[in-house]
Image (cartoon, rainbow, N blue to C red; front, side):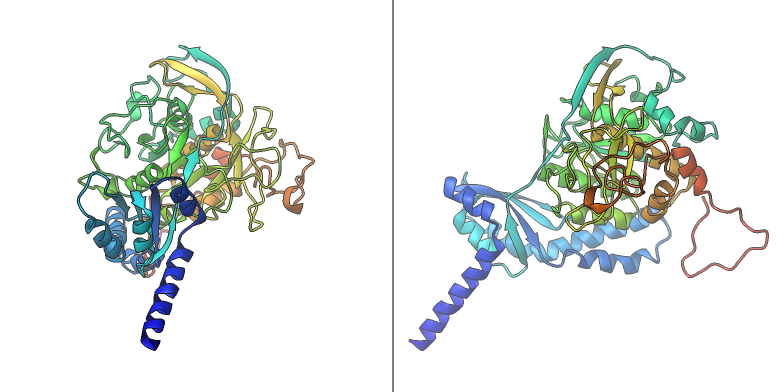
Length: 486
């Protein structure tokens, strides 16, 4: 009987450990329905990034580094997820059996239609760290001003006010329009035939729709078409019209399911064809625009994806959110330490009332920088020559993304730290209007602060301010990790 009691106690302890891994929302959903969708997280997600570091140091080409990083993440995910995959494979064959998708970038499994018994079984796997409900990201609420069809039809048309405010034409005058840089967009898609976007879409591995696997870019909302226009569009609407763009549909009409956002994050690290096959990691973008947010601060569900981008040398730019004017309204992932979080200003350089403010839950300053985001005119999805004027930190973010593209065109291979430093040390602050709200106890008349961040970006200074010093005539011996001059 002692043995039986010990066995029962062990089972009870195991059940307690398993239930501790399961989030309250999963229990709640299973109270309401026989099955639910879950996300399975695994322990040791940081390990492959650390292991990849060792190999990355010895690889000279970006292609080799991206491939090595992807293969390391894939191998780790395959190993630690195998137990749960075995559980799922052993389900009796039926039309109600749970299905799943595996993602190596975040080391997560998305299980669809999981019963309470299956959830419990999965949680007991020792490699599992958490079982939770999927997140749904949001598109920062838009303020529609007016719709304009037609308008500027030439490359040398009048530039939009935001393009002028951040001094993009000063960079163009020096012969840099972002040539050689690829900008990634995770958004609602794109009208790729639009007059301002058609000439610089990279059609080779340039579109992925993780939900519907559609073959060509499409946009049922307009948001994605607008943000791509502000970053790389022609006709005076885009900051880096010489850069190419690629797009992944992470958002539907008004929401962004976690599985789609994760699928897009993984595709950006190592692009595939439209079916999700035949990887070509060397085609990853240099910077990714993320004009979406999670609705709350301190949510780490996209952190592993951002960390992988970082390790790959891809620059993440995120909207700070449209939940202002109160303090501490910044949303994740815009509040992450290793992203450029963006607030919105108008043509008068005043912070837009909707622009979310810091501090973050752990008292860090956000946004990092601000950019034009109030009454911004850009391409729209209603026609190939349609434009729309809308507002949001969603509109400010692609101004920074395009500016980063110009910076990368001048400084190939620049790291996140290089880019962050270039933009935060060259901002304009004198024209900004301090607010009465000194959020987080930080004076709004000092920079950085929780309203504007370091200030409003000035891309001409950022690109010029980080110019490498000219090489000396006497060659110096290379260090242990040689860097190639652009």
